[in-house]
Structures are given as structure tokens and as C-alpha cells.
Image 1 (tube, rainbow, N blue to C red):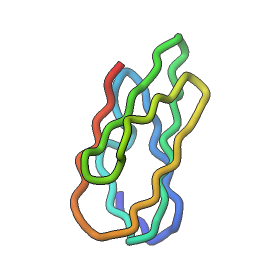
Image 2: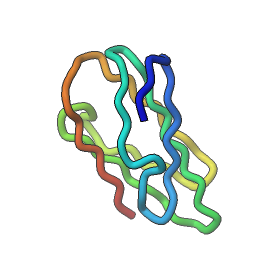
Image 3: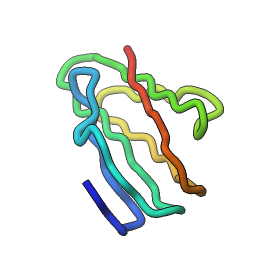
Image 4: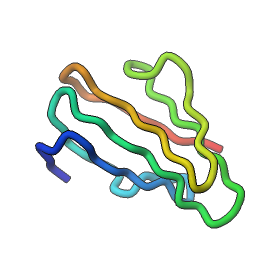
Length: 78
């Protein structure tokens, strides 16, 4: 998914990202939304963009702004 927009939404379901790859402009924000139907909490980690993991409960979201160019590997775990 390519986008020049300042906000991108990525859904979290079954411990996966939907979509699983995105390309964004510098200073764009990505909102991660947990759309699980059960009680599955997602923990988001990104070693070069987050200082501490983000925990997202079902129905909640977390926003991350990328202020520099680069490749970022973001992972989710229970």
C-alpha cells in the first residue's frame, strides 16, 4: 500500500497486520487498531521507532508518527 496521506490505518487481527506492508511519507502517522472479537491484546514493538512496547486491547488503537525516513520492522505479539 502506498500513500502520501498523513494518517494510515492498520488493523490488528489474529496476530497479523492488515495490510501487512505499507509505505508512508516522513511525518505521517500510522494508527494501529485492534479489531479482535475476543480478548486478544496485541503488543506492538518497533526497536527503531518505539522506546517501549505498546499494548492495544480489543477496540482500542495506538498512533505512531514516523519522523524520519527508513525501514521499520514492526511486530505484534500477545
